[in-house]
Each structure stands twice: as structure tokens, then as C-alpha cells.
Amino acid sequence: MSRDLPREILGSLCMEPALLEGLDLTANDFPAGRYREVFEILSAIWEDGRPKEISIAILAEKLGGNEPYHFISSFYTGLQSPSAEGLAMACRAMRKKAITARILTQVERQAKSGELSLEEIRADLVEYDQLNNPEAVFQSSLAERGAHSVKIRPVPWLWHGVMPTHMSTAITGDAGQGKSLVAVDMAARVSSGLPFPVYDKPSPTVCGHVFYVTSEGVPEMILVPRLMAAGADLSKITIIEGMYLKKDNFSMFDITQNLPHLECRAQDFPDLKLIIVDPIASFLPERINPNQTNAVRQAMDRISNLAYKLGIAAPTVMHFNKSSGGRAIHKTSGSGQFEASVKMSWSVIRREDDPRNVRVLVPQKSNISGCDKSLSFSIHPVEFPAPEYPGEIIDTAKIIYGDHVDEDPETLISPPIENDNHVASARRFLSLKLAEGTTLYAKPLIDEAEEQGVPKWALYKAKDRMGILHDKEGTFQGRTFWYQSRDKQS
Image (cartoon, rainbow, N blue to C red; front, side, top):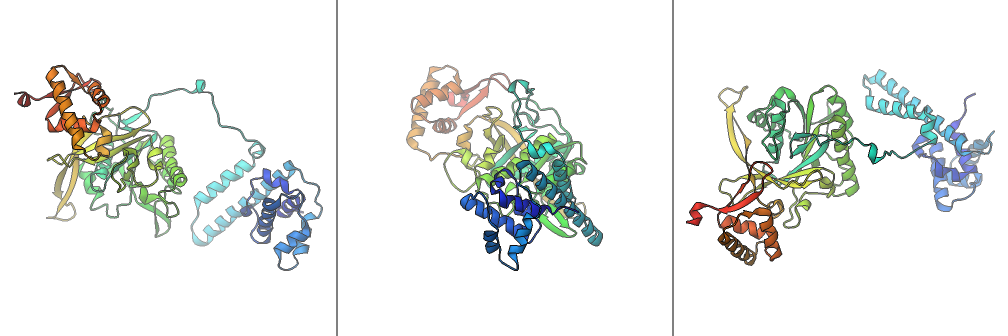
């Protein structure tokens, strides 16, 4: 005769309600109906008063309905005084039966409809396997290792100094300034094996597959023409717009639920190098408030974990908020965890004072290195014939990278309110320094100015207005120095 496990467990909890503290039980572990109701009542009584035992009469009164006393008294039939170990074993056996029932229900559903939820069955089988392991029930331990045993390794880069692999990064900025074009350019370079611009040192050429997760509803008019203009190999780019839960039942991609599908699909592309999510806010479910710290962090950590498991770069595109001023790190819209969760963050800034309308890729945050250089780029229109529409022209755009920008990243991203007195002081300071005729190395020059009360942003503003130029000794790692052009000297 088979055991009625839910009755045994509920009876044990009536006799020793303190055992609830050591069990990872929920109402959903019990069969639907009165068993769940009794468990919920037991839990509520325990939370209210921590009684040594719970009487049949109290349970029957709270349960109500037909013959509750007879139903509850049946819990005690043949029941012995419970032990923590015996109760844990009974709970494990009950869960195994429930999992088996769920799997059978799924198979029956498949037989009727021709559909099968592989993800649900896979999760059930994993849980069943854990329940079959007694150590998983009775033992737990810290996931720990001594620091001395960790084998350190250099940070692997997709784009050296800009885009690491095995971790997530961010590309932020105001709408319409070129964030997506930067992401498209990266996708094109990876798909075609084109080199990245030199940031701090040359990057090895990378060629592989790209997943582009996008909410752009018309990729045939915007995203794909941009990829073509950037020189992408379209055969190596997979555009992911959402999920089909059932046939013709489309839903938006959800990073809190659907990343396992992405990981599974990645197994079909062993050369996968890059997953772009553009923009990240479109792929948070409605239940998550983008300003909610814990929920945003958990969602973003899922992307970081996936990047590490697959060994790929995972940039996410984010928008700036509408506020002005404040530190650059607080410019990203929504919870600060959008920025805190990534290892590197880059902002796309438009140079309003530049007649060429240059954009700048600015380092906003780095947990890897002290990056402080920005990289300029410009947006260029591109036209080419529409392959499927004779006589029609596709109008799109691409970016072309330029020189490094020697300007304070904090000032570029979040310019301070200009104070003419500060700028005037900076001009006087620079005029005196230029008159000395010594080499003006940027870092000590800025440090000395700040010691004299001249803010860094004002020094850069005065530098631009006075036509002072900058250059670098040697290549890449050389010191930056400022100097006056010959025209200005004469």
C-alpha cells in the first residue's frame, strides 16, 4: 500500500511545528486543494505564535468546509513521533512524486497538442536528480576556494582596452547620437574579421558569429542596411527579436526568462564571439521597474553570467536620463545597477561645439583598468541600390573612427555649468605656463592648476579657446603634452 506522503508530512508538522524552520517547503509542493490550504494555515499559525504543537480543533476551525475534523484527524493515522531526518526524506519523496506527475502531464499534453515544453521538463529532471542525491538534501556548504589556488589570467579582449570578453559592458548615451551605430560597427567587424581601431594597443583580428538581440521592428529598413554599410558578413549575424511561446504566439525577448534559450542556441555556433542587446530596457519584463535596484541587478547579472559561460563579449545599449549636471556615472537612465553591474561602460557624446559634428566614445567606468582616453568618430551617410527594388536607393549611415581625444571624460559626459571667472583664471594660468617655455606635460599641468583652484574642466575649455594643441611622446603609452601652434606663437 502506497504512503500518503502529504498526510504524513502535515501530521508531523502538527505534532512538531518547529520542524518548519528546517524545511524548504512551499504550498506548491503539496497537491492542489485542501492539502495546500492546511499547509498555509499551519505556516500562518507557526509564524503568529510559535506553538509547540497545533491541535486538530484549531486546524478544523480555520479550514472550514465539510467534515474538516475527520479530514485532519486522518493525518495522525499510524503516525509516529517525527524526526527532522525522517520528515526531510518524506518531503523529498513527495517532491519526486510531484515532479513525476508534472512530467507525465507534459507528455500527455504533447500527445494531444503536438507541443512540448522542453524547458519545463529539463528543469524538473534537474530537480529530480538533485532529490535523488541524499547529500543535496541533508548537506550544504560554502562555494569557497583559497585565493592562493586561483590561477590568474590576463583579461581577454575583443577590442583591446575597449571591449573585454567573458563579461558584460555598456554603451550609453542620448537618443540619436550613435550608440546603435557603434554596436553595429562592432558586429560588422567581428562578422567579417575586420580590425578594430587602435585604442591603447592593437587588437588581434577576431572573426566569428554575432547574436544581435534587438527591439527594432523593421530590421529590413534600418538594422540590416546599417550592417551592410559597415561591411558586415550577414551570414554570420543572427538577429533575435523575441520568442515564439507557441506557433504564431510572439512575445518580446525577456532577459530574466529567455537567456537559457540563447545559451542553448549558442551551442549551434561554436564561433560565437559577440552578443549585443540593444537596448537593454526593451528586454526587461513589465513586472520589473527599471528603477528597482535588486531586480535590475539580478537581471543584469544573468547577462554577465552568460558572457562568462560562453566566453564572449556582451555589450548592452542604454539611454541617458534627462537630468543635467551630476557625475557621469549617474547619467544612465534607471537604476544605478545598470552601470554597477557591468565591468566597463562607454558613453557616446556629441561635440556640439565642433563644426564637423564629431561624436566621442568616452570611458565612463572601468573595473579593469584606469582607462582615461576617448576616441572620436563621425557619422557618414551611405547610399546603395536596393537589391530587391530596382531603381530604389537605400539611405543609411556608418561610422568612421578618428583620433584620440585629450579631454577629461567626466567633463565630456556631464559638462559643468560654465563659470567665466574659472575660465579666465585658467587662461591666465596657461598664459604664464606657456611663457615659461618648458614642456607642458598634461597630468602635472592639470594637478598644478587644481592646486591653484582652477578646475580641470575650465583648463580644458581655456585650452580649446586659446588654440592650444596636444601630442604624445612615442606611441600608445607615451606622455601627453600641450603646446601652442606656430600661428599662435607668431
